[in-house]
Image (cartoon, rainbow, N blue to C red; front, side, top):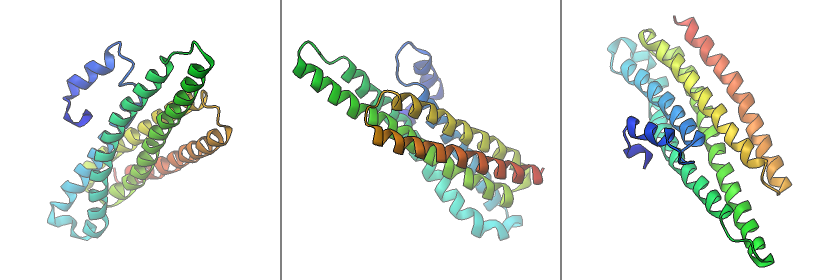
Length: 207
């Protein structure tokens, strides 16, 4: 499991010639780093009596950022598993019409799974960006730069995951699914831009 690996061990796997983990898992992990930073800023703020007025705003942010960190770590693991299924489907025999049909069906199903995982990563990172703005507005100004780093991490996680959505969609034959997934990804990209801009403005306003 990704959450059980050391940073060094994960990077060694990422740098190896193995096709997975790859960019999808890396994107999810970057998003998880952003979530951890938001949790840190909330925790520091809530631990100080000086910021009692911020508690109603930051307590739910702390709880949700912790949940998103766990979710993104799980998505990183799921991404590698999903790619493994695509790879296995590609290696299926295709010497007969029946084998070709079975291979195509397995490949198309696995490609949708491999697309769904990074879409979920994008959603998680988009939600995290909204939390970043709240953390920037109500968190201690002494750690507001950490919120800024979280914004960039969440944005990178979302945009990186979109690359995996796009590459899988290019191989999927179900046009209705492709249109639906592409529309969702485009909406999340737009959301990323607006939320990141708002969060960074809040960060800079506290510096």
